[in-house]
Image (cartoon, rainbow, N blue to C red; front, side, top):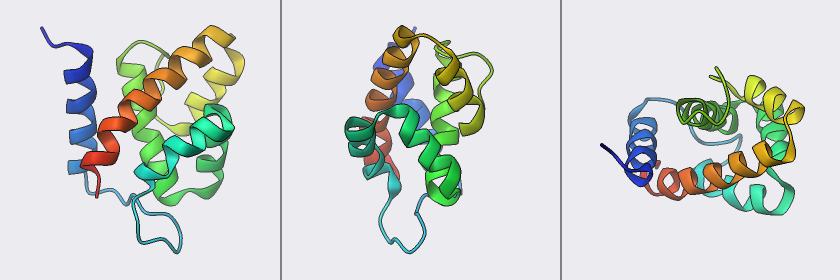
Length: 115
């Protein structure tokens, strides 16, 4: 049986191995390193709204975050940023707090694996 840290690391590693583009417009760096401070400063909902509007790397990585949160049972049947944003906006504050905490924990691995 795997613990939560192993599950996070495995999903982040799988994300890194996908051939998705994780760089934003006009940026050379990985957005995986830019999203956690954005979450801390502006909140998960605003970060997801930004990713949804930007498309590209931000949306790609937030789609993978939605997949992880769905696999963990935090949200139900979310496979993309738009559905995650909708569920979190309609949910209660406890759900948003849990999702934010798990998102930051997942990004601790994602930012190390995704180049």
